[in-house]
Each structure stands twice: as structure tokens, then as C-alpha cells.
Amino acid sequence: MTNGIRIAPSILSADLTRLAQQVEQVVAGGADWLHVDVMDGRFVPNLTFGANMVEALRKLSDKPLDVHLMVVEPERYIDRFADAGASVFTFHPEVSPHAQRHLVHCKSRGMMAGLALNPSTPLSMVEEVVADLDLLLIMTVNPGFGGQSYIPASNDKIRRARELLNARGSRAFLEVDGGISRQTIAAAHAAGADTFVAGNAVFASADPAREVQELRRRCLVTV
Ligand code: DX5
Ligand code: ZN
Image (cartoon, rainbow, N blue to C red):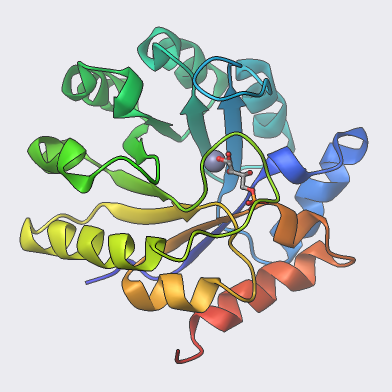
């Protein structure tokens, strides 16, 4: 039971001096969602965007904006991102002990609610809240930077995450993020992922539109 395929280019790797054009390119290539990485320099060793980036993207595109909070106390920002036009609000339970309450809050603000797990965080961290999840994000690199290498052990974790969602009858999206490329996407898809974040693979390529198409095509290659 999967939900089709969604490709979500990560704005982190876009050329911000021509953001509008980069968005146009990936949308032309069939990008389903736009992924926005919010980092605070505390949960992860890097600083990126706030809600103002979501506001800007909302003006540039009507695609769902998939916001990934890599910040401590992510719950402090739920209302701000909802107001800015976020469609998905995904945060890390590693830094949010009352995640269930916050998932409900996200949904009450009209957003899909997601939890993200670092590579070293076990799936059991989300087991008690599967019913509250619209999305489960399996990090396939340690978050913080674009352009890192896919961790091969992720495939087994994706498989177990898919089993968990299916066993509970969950229709949550199963997203993967980090090192997704032509080389890694097929195995992640075969393991059960349905939503693919790709930063470097898309925006460092000479033709971002074509790369989005190619990533989608590679999902259908048997591995
Ligand atoms: C990693 C971020 C990712 C990042 C992925 O910390 O959460 O969304 O943009 O970039 P690539 O696809 O280049 O690994
Ligand atoms: Zn991300």
C-alpha cells in the first residue's frame, strides 16, 4: 500500500539569486511538492530559512510546501508556518517530547503533520502516534546539509517503516530525505518510500526539470 510517487525538490540547494526561475524549472519538470529545510544552528549545525521563505514560495507557486523543521522546540513555530502558507509541517520527536499534542495542533491549522527520524533514531519513537501521522520522514543522511551521501542502511529502515504503516492501516506518506539521486532513489522506492526529497541531485544538475523527470522514472526501474 503506497501512495504513488511524489518528488519534492529541496529549496536548500536552489540558487536563491534566481529562486523564481528555479521553482519554475522544477515545477515544469513535474515536481509535486517543494521541500523547505528550516535549521536553527542548534538541533543541526547549520542555519537556513524561516517562515518568510515559505511566504515567498507561496507567492511563486501553488504546489504544496513541505516544511521540514530541524529546530529545537519546533512547536513554537506551528502557527507562524501555518500563517505563512505551509502545507506539511514535519518536525523531529528527538527535540519535541509532546509530539502527539503538536501533531494535532498542526492539523487544526490545516497542515499535514509529520514526524522525522534521524538515522540513529529508532522507529519505535513514532510507534505510539502512527494514527496521528500524515507523514513519516526517514532521514537518509544526518540532517544539516545538502549534498551528503545516502546511508545504505536506510533501505532496511524504510522497509520496516513501510511495514509499520501498513500494519496499522496508515495512509501516511513515507518520505525519504538526504542523498536521493538517480543512484539511490530506486532502492528507496522499492523499500516502500513514496515521497522523495532531492536537493543537490536536482539543483546541481544542468537541467533541473529533466532531473525531476528522471528521478520519477528511476523509481519505476526494478532493483
Ligand atoms: C538535509 C535536509 C535535506 C537536504 C537534502 O539536512 O533535510 O532536505 O536538502 O539535500 P540532498 O538531496 O542534497 O541530500
Ligand atoms: Zn529536509
